[in-house]
Amino acid sequence: MLDYTTLKIIWWLLVGVLLVGFAIMDGHDMGVGTLLPFVGKNDDERRVVINTVGPHWDGNQVWFITGGGAIFAAWPLVYATAFSGFYWAMLAVLWALFFRPVGFDYRSKIHDARWRSTWDWGLFVGGAVPPLIFGVAFGNLLQGVPFSLDNNLVSHYNGSFWALLNPFALLCGVVSSAMITMQGGMYLAHRTEGRIQIRSITLAAYCAWAMVAAFVLAGLWLRFGHIDGYVITSSVDAAALPDPLAKTVARSSEAWWQNYRAQPMLWLLPCLAICGASLATWLVQSGRTLRAFVASSLSILGVIGTAGAAMFPFVMPSSIQPNASLTVWDSVSSHLTLQLMFFATLIFMPLIIFYTSWAYHVMRGKVTVADIQANSHQAY
Image (cartoon, rainbow, N blue to C red):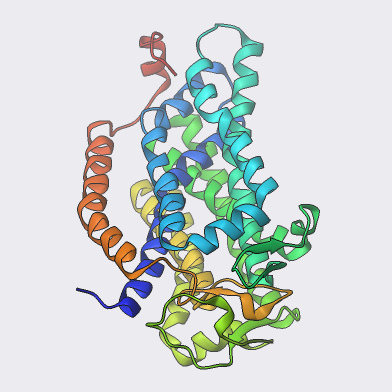
């Protein structure tokens, strides 16, 4: 039986794995949706683009659903606080995601240029809006969220939707959007050929460099832009039952960097983010598209890992009641819940990876305009 402290760390890592898996797998089909109106210049080319992800996009949603379920079960206080504080932002994500299943299912039902163009832009919204909002949300986490906890541990959000759209958070949104669009471009470069592939390579490279520039700028802003981090100043019993109000927290300009000073190996994460995107650009322009997609995926791991390592052990810091900040140690479920979920994950996570890998293996290969014209009855 794993002890409570170990399970808390394991679930912090597992939630991170699910976020990275979502960004890589569901991220590349969102990136394809974002690029759809720009890499496909006519109906046949746009059908090629859609058919690269059409058979897989709903399966990739498993990462999103599982990630949300894991946060709900492992970090119930985080889930409750986030979904009350970020309520309108989450609704905006949900509304944007509506365009995806409807767009995929209905786009080719009617052979009308205006009908299909409308759904193409709907798929663009469904692909472009969620990564932007997720990035903005992460930028607000790094600054602290204006919530408080009463003595019954009920959260009270004291901010507004428009306050979330501050300059630093929007910059983080640019990082997220460029990262996901880069991933989609690398995937399209691997699955297409000809003019579609050339356009995908060009746009993927632009997005990669935009991501690197925004990522570096966000790091410099965090370091020199007077955005204070959070540090626990009291002793913490990692094995104790959750009680966010049992600790004391202070704000410090050095706080987000203390983990990197304590563990210099963590600097490999931002290096992976920058070098992975740079390598992906070079590989895709050299025609090694599968390796470029892998390098792009590693860059995503580096970006998310960099933020996670900086914030640890904080998950959702509070800007107005720092002592109520939610951490890995005090926002989790019971020992039994974490343990049961852990063993369930050991069973089902390999199954998800297996069937996803098998599906991609079976439906591998290029999607071409000739294929689309020869199979006009296809759903997408």
